[in-house]
Length: 295
Image (tube, rainbow, N blue to C red; front, side):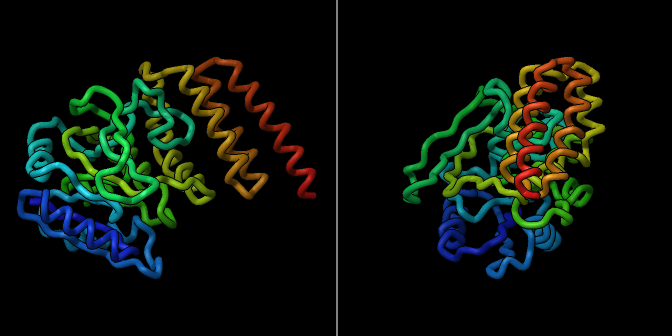
């Protein structure tokens, strides 16, 4: 039995989503719709509101702009919860590497990526999505998962919940995945094929929320690095991308510099790689030029 929670702003997508669930889930279910036409709620607010009303022990938080293609996926999901050890959050796209620098799940090197879904970003016609498949198609431990589909036991949600200090519709998935991973094991799970009709749109709010999600668990991340969970090349790649995102999305010049330096310290400490310092210096020069132009 599954409670499916969706925050809705688009009636067409919602009705398409409901029909898809009814035709494929294969187990007793309920759909809890949190209407958000006027954007009164952040997605974290909406999900927590819906979860409080849930009747069943398994909660599935799903974007409304998806359709399911796998028959009887509800039984597949329930079986995963019964068989996977210490399960936290289950999803259909994620990363098994946790970088020091703030990032989304897709930043990872391909050997750490795990996914299986259809991405339909253009025509919106059901069944014409492009297959996104990464990694061996077996259940695999991960840290972060894409928020288009997140499933967890109600007991896990009660323990952590979505962070309502995060405004808007970004970072909620990274935040709860990181927090849950400190106590439970998150998993990529194959065999539940869905089609997603949009793509992410990073902006300043995405950046701020991603940084906030990272900083809440940064001590946990650094402890992982101490025990050998360190890919130097990927850490440098993640830090360099983080600098680019700071420059591109942040409107606060002081904030840009402070966060760039804040993450340089642990990245350089653990990698001992001078490229991190080199990228920071280049970034600092761009920061100075931008600050001078603003003045």
